[in-house]
Amino acid sequence: YHVISGAKQVLVSFSNGASMKATVDGTDPSSDLAVLKIDASSRALTPLPLGNSDAMQVGDPVVAIGNPFGLDRTVTAGIVSAIQRAITAPNGNTIDHVIQTDAAINRGNSGGPLLSRRGLVIGVNSQIETGSSSDSSGNVGIGFAVPSNTVKTVIAQLIREGHIDRAFLGISATPITRDLARVFRLPTSQGLLVQSVQPG
Image (cartoon, rainbow, N blue to C red; front, side, top):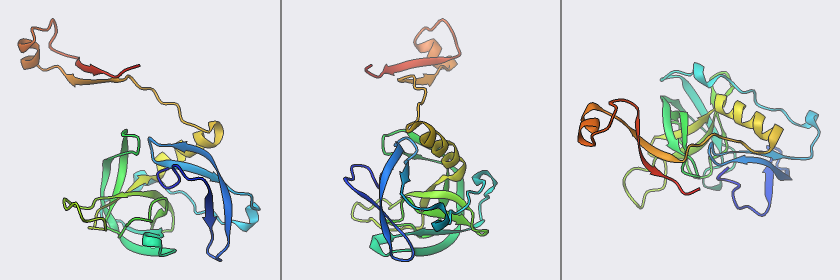
């Protein structure tokens, strides 16, 4: 999503050097995913199969493909460094079950696939950690990919509906502990204490 957000025109390029105009068929800022549509024969395309991201384990080898810094079709290799990470989506929501990898991911890799050793897409490259230095913007060995199982669910809804409907309470809350119940003289020692309510 963040790659095409605000774009006036979207082009999809292919390994033979050709490129085609694409239309944005659906977006989901909450998962940082988008569906692009091109006018091409299905026989002209070879889709990469989606794997089961839940089957990935720490240490499994992976390959990231993308266009870092404008360097087309760059391939980097690494391992799954961690699973079940949470990252912040472009709209501030949390993306869960994210795959962390040490395969070099840089600006321009976003939207590219993270592949298993069998060539299955197990994630979509989304973000990197740049460390604490404010002038650093490159790879420090920590990249994140939206897991393929999230991709399957979100993309199916985007193709069908063009958008994703999500339940949202619009509050922030904290669990009630015995100490909290005592300090605030609450009538219960379990549940949630509403801290704020968002407008609307």
